[in-house]
Length: 163
Figure 1 (cartoon, rainbow, N blue to C red):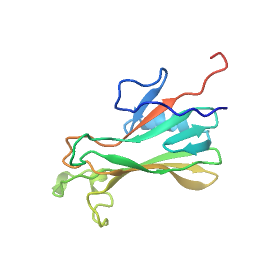
Figure 2: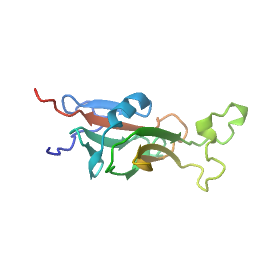
Figure 3: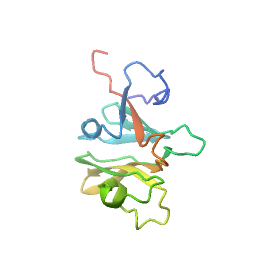
């Protein structure tokens, strides 16, 4: 199985044919992509799964000079054993401190405990061989909320025998 990185970015209109785009809202699709697989190679921002699927992990780029909406890939790990469970830990943060009674769980999570209240995260954990592994993590801030949040995954599915 030959590893070939995915060209392009999630924000560009030009990516390779057959590449699928997922983001933080696609938890079911991400779970199905990872379950019963191993991560055989980590290369920069790419993961290679044991079935030949390639994943490119890209933090969201808000596009503002103020860095609002920017999330950077900070963790990317391999998994030697078969992934049996996938869990998501999303805790985006922004400039707002006064959520009051209307705050969501994501807004409240770890907020008071953090020294840097402007740093949020998106984490994907996998479980393999009774171990919890932080497969990937994106750190950043929503800022004022206007410039977006999260991450994108570009996925090149494994080629089938007929391809």
